[in-house]
Length: 412
Image: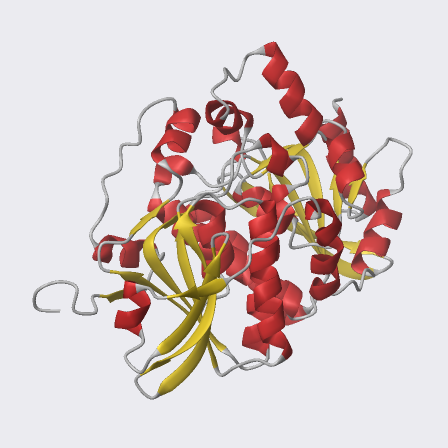
């Protein structure tokens, strides 16, 4: 029996797992007990399409998270998945937005979550894994925001090249992840899975402390200052005036829209989001949460996360997922949180910011995509077949609720 299969069997044995008869694609679920108390287990397994999560799996998993939030029952999530089902296009992205929102609400409600990993945990699955304070890896697990094919394409290398594979493995494998983050553990056959679950369910580390613990990993990255700027898009949005500061791909300020005053922060400048930029965005949001304003608008102008090995070495997924938690904290403190797509958005960065938002708006002509075309081609082995849809396509897929024309087109 392979190590991942042995870990899954050890997990099921530790909770006396009783599977539910139903199954949706790669997702199955059931229940068990730990120390006489009920626990739930949801399993995303690699049955087909690399264990990818499409809208059907996402809908059911979101429902399971909602049950966990309502019952406050300890929940275990087993993941052996390459992430969103790219072939479903925006439908899968909308599904991931919904499931990630449900997961955030579950852990924010006080439901305890533990994550156990199979062979692969890429993209959106790696973000789901970081909803929990701890993760238990199989020795064969690889975890990253970008899979090997995307990382190789971004580096201009062949994913089958032995030198590249050695470099990627050194960054993505379980032993490297355990060294990078104190929340990552590697399973061994003699390990008591039940004991690990008890410790994980008892972990009370708050999200703000988890954010602070990430800072040493990016200490070598310089932080460009934010300087006063004037932006045409903000001028049209804030008819009552605004103050904005921008630097290093970050935006922060405040403005007045009609009678409503609001604070705003954002990721701008098109450049893919790496670990340092994600952390600094989260820092801006956590500072707002110290004295929460009535309204907070998040602006996004970025198609994807960084596909660099340098970012993956320090567990980029943890930083991308970390952008969501202060936005949830703001909501819980009474702030209305919105997201506006300025020109482009997609992938895990979109999900991290859209999931906590009460409303996602797009400026007229803005584009939302699952991943950039080159990344989709690297995964599916061909060009991205999807044309840019009209706004109604975004609304139908569940990735946006409102389009802002702001006088930019005739008749707006």
